[in-house]
Length: 90
Image 1 (tube, rainbow, N blue to C red):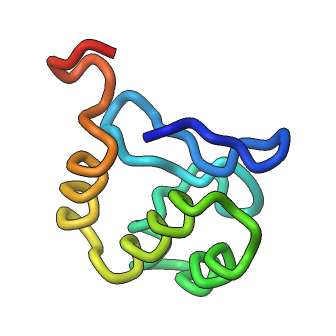
Image 2 (image 1 turned 90 degrees about the vertical axis):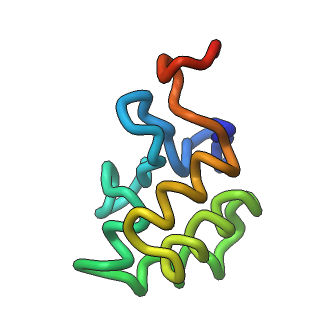
């Protein structure tokens, strides 16, 4: 996943451990979008989609809401590639 920031702040990061991005700011920093969609505050992703974030971030939020769990992880890998160190050259 591209590590693109929002202004000077990073919106999502792509941890190399499992390749699933996590939110990098605010009260849900460190939470994967698909976990947020299934749990404590799915409306946060709706909020993110209405703000001036990069299009790839909005696409990730939308997919997290509609394709939870393993389907979301599969989509992330197909869209952005496997995590670094997962048999691929970074």
